[in-house]
Length: 316
Image (cartoon, one colour):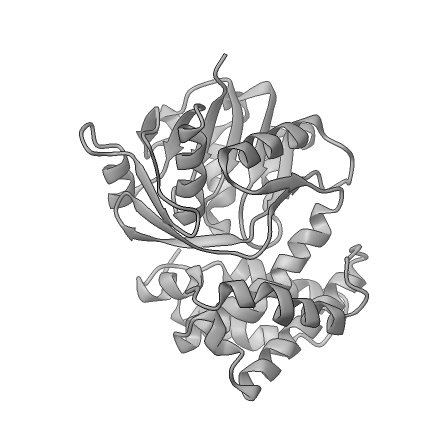
């Protein structure tokens, strides 16, 4: 029997995943909004087109809608790909009954705190977190360009326990063309992405620069180094198991391995500011600041970026 998937959020990441899963033969429903959703759902000439570094793909979702009440029942997987500030309201509107008893809800989002919001609705045993470190942009309604992939997508349960659902959906995504594997330390992976996002997204958004340009200037690198050092100190204080022995070791990985494949990427935060939309700064630098304050850690660089981006963000 064909597995049924609800992709909740049709920005760049959600659209790419929905397209590739549909192309792989799964029954995909898409929950989104705006012109992009309208173009995807057109009866003639619709669907999702993907181009860029992963090649050309196209598939037509089973259904498209902008009201969670229109979602079906018994989905095998609910992939939450909305902006972090939309998570709580969206998953409450979807409701636990939409997910099959053996199904999984998986957060494909930026920042911290998203898994907890999923678990509050779908239950801890049916919820998973994923570290997503590919990206792209909607180039026109119905079309997305994949511009960057720094590492494989990682799926796991924050407890570190082995989860059959994580194993299954990692295999499904990987077979569909989204390079993916499971991890027993998804929290460490999510913090690693916070280091990456906190260093690149706000500064790139405020300066209007692609990622590669940020590292070309010594002053900008010093800001990024400070942001990473602060976030690493907070993660350490939280007792997070990190794959890097120090902030300096992470920074070597960041500049040597993560940044080079992403030099031409324009952050989603920059795209949000350009369109006058709210950003995810609160789930990234905001979480570093809140947790840093709780531990008495100096997080002044993250605090400045939080204040500056918040001042330029559109209303939620």
